[in-house]
Length: 361
Image (cartoon, rainbow, N blue to C red; front, top):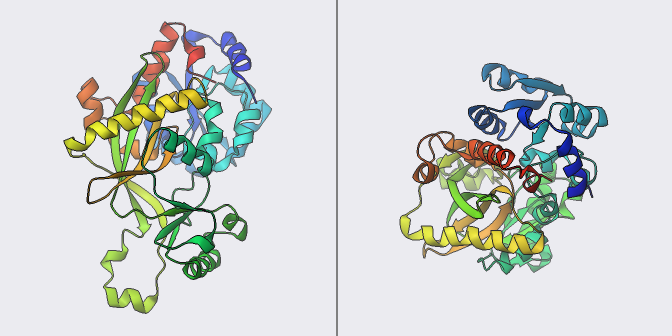
C-alpha cells in the first residue's frame, strides 16, 4: 500500500500557491469543480472523450485530460503530469467502480483527499456491516446464501454500481429465477452472483444523509439529504397491477437521478448521532478515520425506525441536488455552501494551517 509517508513526500514537492483540485469526469465532478473554482483553485478533469461536451458547456475546468478509459489514471506518465500540476484528487463513486481497491491503494501515486485505509472497509459489504454494527447502527438482516432467504430480500453487487443489477426475491426459488433473468438481460454475470450481497429489504422511505468529517475542526457536519430516483422500480407504479402481472416484469434499481428531501426535525437527533458514531468507529478501525464527505444509506420505516444498509466514505452523487441550495448546509454556513465547495474549503484551510498532509493520503 502507498502509505502516508510516500504521499507526504509528494506533497512536500507541491507548490502550495498553485494547488489544483482534480477528479474523474463523471459522478459528482461538476459539484467538485464548481466548489473548487469558488474557493479559488485551478481544476483538472480526467475525462472520457465522449463526455468532453459536459465541460465545454459548463466551463469550470481549467485543464481537460481526455482518456479512452478511466483505468488510464494508473498510467505512470499521466500520474506524473498530475503531480506536476500540483493536483489533489477527490475520489467519488467512479473511482471504485472502474478501479479496484488494490489499484487505488497500491498504484495511484497522486495525493488523494481522504483515507485510503478505509477503502477496504467501504468496498467490502461484509466489512461495512461490521463497521456499522460496531458503531451502534440498526441494520437489516443479511443472508450468507440464497438458500437461506426466508423473507423479502434485495440482492446487491459489491462496490459502487449505481443500483444496476439489483433485484428482489423472497425465496431461494425466486432468487435463482430473478438472477437468471438479470443474466439474460445483461445486467449481471454468473461471476457477479458469486459475490452478491443478500440483505433483508426494509420497507420504508430511502433517505441518504451526507456528512462532512473535518479533521481540522474535529467535527462531523450534516450538509445534505437526498433520495434516489431508480429505474424501473420507481416507474412501475404507472403500470396497472393487472398489466404488471401479465408482462411478468422484474424491475431493477439503476439510479437515474436524485431528489432533495428535508427530514422531519424529530428524526434529526438520531441522524446526527449516527454520523458521529460512524466517524468515531472509523477512527478506531482505520486511523485517522473518515476524512471529508461520507454518506449513510438508510431506510426509515413507518414506525420511524432508521435502518442503515450501506455507507459511502466519499462524496455521493446525491449531494449534486444541493449545489447552492442545500437547507442543511445553509443552516450551518448560510448561502451557497454545498459538498463540493466544503471539500475545497477544507483543502484551502489545511493549506493555510500547513496541515495538508493530515487530510490527504
